[in-house]
Structure formats: C-alpha cells, structure tokens
Amino acid sequence: MRKFLYLALFVAAVFTMSCNKKDDAPKTEAEVQEEAEVKDKADLSAQELMETAEFTEEGLLGIIKEPKAITALEYEALFLAYAKCELKDSCSVESCPANDVAITLNKKDKYDFVEGINRAEIHKKLLKHANPIVRAQAMSRFRDVWSKDPSTLDLIVDVLKLGKEPVVLCALFDNMLIQIDDPRFTDLVLAEAKNENPVVRARVAGLFGKGHGTKNEAALAVMAQLLEDENQGVRKAACSNVGGMNLEQFIKPIVAILSNNDEAEIHDKCVDALLTMFYNYPSHENTSAAAYKAYMEYFAKKPRSEKVPPWNCISDISSVNKETIDGWKKRAKYFKAADVSKVFTEIILDDNAAWMARNSAIKVVATWGTLADLKKIKKSLAKSKHDKVKHVMKTLDDTIAKYGKK
Image 1: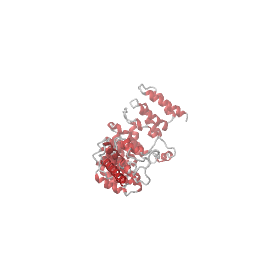
Image 2 (image 1 turned 135 degrees about the vertical axis):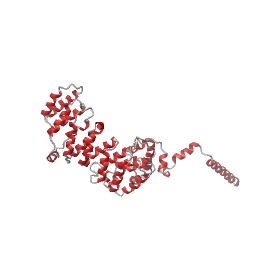
Image 3 (image 1 turned 90 degrees about the horizontal axis):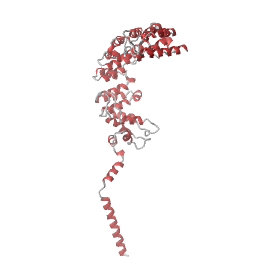
Image 4 (image 1 turned 180 degrees about the horizontal axis):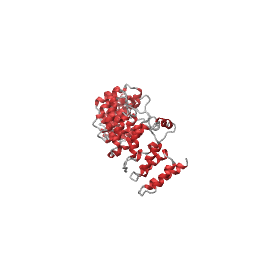
C-alpha cells in the first residue's frame, strides 16, 4: 500500500514540473501580439488610444467598442485625430478621416454616446491642446455653450494666449457672433483687423456687419479701413457685411469700389450692400435715398461689359415681400418704379452687357414695369444683331407669356 502511495506522489510531482516548464516557456511572437491586441484599451490615454488606430475613417471608428455607447475616452481619442489633419488654407481643414468620423458620429441610428458623457468638458479641455487644429476644432464646438454660459468666454480669452494661429482665430470669429458686443471681444477682434493674414481680416469684417458694432466708433473705423484693404478678398467680405450696419457713411467707399472696373469680381457684394441699405428684402425695414441714388447710378453707368454690371446681383430688387412692401413704399419716397424699369430696360437693350445680365434685368422690369414696357422692349430687341440676343429674346418671350396670365 505504501509503495502505491509513493508512486502516486512521484507521478504528481512529475506532472507539476511539466506544467511549470510549460508556463515558463518563452511566448511566441503571435502570442505576444495577441496579448497586446486584447489589452484593455481603457488602460490607455486618449492620445495613446488614438495612436493605436490607422488614420482612416474605418481605422478610427475601430477605436469604438460599442457604437451605441461611445465613452468619453473614445470620443476624446477620435477628436485628437484632428492633429493629423492638414490645413487647406490658413483657416480651413483639408478633408481628412477625422472630419469623416465627426460626420459619421451624427448618424444616431448607428452611433450614440454613453449616458451622461459631457462632451463640452472634453472640448473645454482640448482648448488648451498644443496642436492649433485641435484647439480650433474645440473652439468651433462652443457656439451653444456660449449662449448658455457666457463665463466660458473668460476661458477662451485665456486660450488665445497660447497662440493666435489663423485657424484658431477663424474658428473663434466664426462662432462668436452672439458675443460680439462683449467689450472684451470687441477689443480682441478690432486688434485682428490689422492681422497680416487677409483671411483673418476678412473674418473680422464678417463679425462687424449684419447690424453689429454700429454704436462702436472703433468698429466703424475698422469697417471703413477694411473696405479699403489692400486685399480684394477682404474688401469683398467688408462689402458683403457692411450693408447690415445700415450707415450711409459707408456709401462713399462702396461707390469707390463700384467705380473701379478692376474690382468687377466683387461688385455684386457691394451692390448688395447698397440694396440692403435702401430696400432690405424681406423685411423692407431700411430706407436710404443716398444708397438708392448710388445704386441707380451704378446700373445706369456706361459703357457696360461682360463683367459690369455682374449678372448675379441684378434681379435681387425684383424680390418683394407683399406683407411689408406697402409700408416701405410710404417711407421710401425716393423710390420710383418707373425709373427702376427705365434703367434696367437700358441694360436689356445694351448689346455690350452680358446676356445673363440682360436676362436678369428682364425680371426687374417685369416686377416694376408694365406688360407694355416688356412688349416695347421686344420690338427694340428684334433689331439687335448680337449673337447671344436669342437667349435674351427667349427669356423675354417667356416672361411676357407669364405676365399675360397674371
């Protein structure tokens, strides 16, 4: 019996030694890789987690364990991928996987976040990231937060101390309109009106238009400065927005641009500024005899050409809000429908003008003129030998046919 007991103990000892030797055996490369892949990603930082993924949309989405329960760590890791994107220009990001992921995450039927996740806090944290594109993207997420929590502005002021790269400033300016009258930001924006980057200066023009800054003398001086900026893109942005300020002091620099045919590329925006000052569809709230006079003189100016006047701003005055137009007419004593019809009739009949501009002018005459005016134009137009007059005649015929059905 004792012999059998010794034999059992011996077998057990051998078995144990065998098992221990197996555990102590070196791991194969495949086993090491497998263990690395199954390592709990929660042990990684957001930066490390982002670095584990291939920089493709599919690769980044692979960070997410549960599509319907994205964690704060996963979201931050995905956001940090913006650091690998490149700028298309000084203010906008090239199409890249990080952008694609952001769009994909909005598909609520496939993706959602863990309940209680505070993405605003993540954005706030990333405002201090070293990479300017990450800071800019975090900045761009603060539109709603600002409207609810103005104290966040203090944080953003501090963030700008990290650096005023154009991409960060543009993100700030594109999303701060609701706070533009805050004195801290007024001073900040005005200072950037002299930024060496024209794209930033153009963004400044966009902020102080649309009715903002009208009571700030420094802002008014800046808008006048931007209307005369050395860069045409900045002048274009200024014209695009200054009409909303509805101040006649800006008519002179606007007219200076419209008087220069080398500025034809931005004439449409400057015409829109004048139109906003005296017509302002659809509210028809604004009136300005001076802006109306400048507008009419521009369209009456000769010689016309393929570029002047531009076709894409001609028909805007034919837009009418029937609910507000009568009240406007009572206040806008300067406005004469017959004069408008006459000036735009001249454009229709001018073979030097672009045929698309002539087509657009037909719509204006149909709005402010009469059916008799249109028929008279047709008789005169029939004498034209211009190679594109057939396009104008077709539009005129169609307009007369529609007019007769009213």
